[in-house]
Image (cartoon, rainbow, N blue to C red; front, side, top):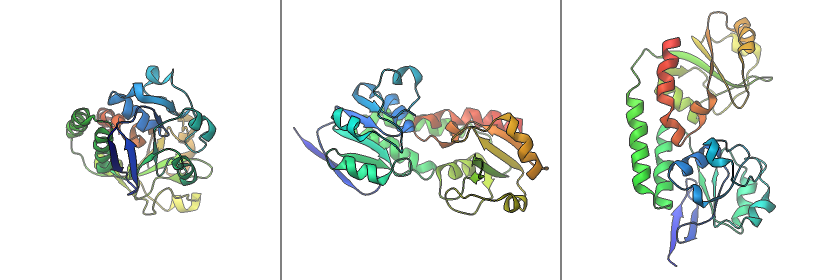
Length: 260
């Protein structure tokens, strides 16, 4: 059996005995991507939050949450590769699993990183043609989004306390490419007080459907802080899930822009 060496997004080297045959994914968006690339038959375990594509994931073994994987179940499933992510999974879990099983870790911080993810997984699983076709489709769909004036925005992902998307994140990169200027200058996911928020002057407030599930009932709460802003509930999966789901975001953005 020919051994192959691969470098993940953290610069870690993993050695595989040929193409993986038993794979566990610890990342919902990467589970969806693997299935899109035609690799469902290799998946022996996924997280409880791996919900897309709905029919395909129903019969797959669940190994716990992204932050709380059940390591004994993972070990019992005897994978020859585990797919993880720097932000979504805990380093301690990655290190523990790596003692017995190769773990390939992605690190996605912007729009371009998504294509690297798709190409790298295509290479790892001998799905280069499928990966190339998917990347081409995503780029073509993004080219269909009409150019508009950039709008100043805030993107909320949590309530009590208010947590927002900051710089150096995939969502921030997607907002910018979509024609929205995220006015939060802090990095990652800062928490801001009502007083601090009231000093800002965004044109648009985006309330994400995940990880906190903002609803229409929350709009009045934000109207008290931002009386002059447009407030919209948005599909958090489309803004935050890298991988194949980015092929669905452009059509959503076209309709969203029409509504504001």
